[in-house]
Image (cartoon, rainbow, N blue to C red; front, side, top):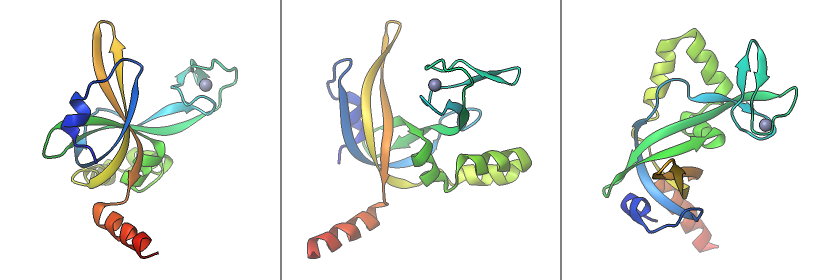
Length: 167
Ligand SMILES: [Zn+2]
């Protein structure tokens, strides 16, 4: 288990990728707007829809097929520091507890129900496996932390280990 301060500050060169497990508390969403995007079914990159026609994904396929895919940014912390985690599809579904198409329908039909669901994201304590990379934008470098998987909550992890130990 690595704390956030170490993840934020450890020496790392551009193009280098590091993986950590870290136990943190979700403070809140760190974004405006939708928690999903139109994702190309082939390359998962963002698809833009112009006049009802899907255009512009990385793979530039004709007749793009696309679907909604979760993409959220979470503000998380532990006793050492805070950080922003980027979380995609399956892991967001674990946090929110429903597929993106369900949440999209709820948002469209009843914003109060939607807001109640969004509030439940905060204050969860989870163990995340994260992938850490430094990325360059112009002359600025920033550390990108992407969630790879979510482990069960801490107590359940202990239980699982104990069962394994007995075997
Ligand atoms: Zn594509």
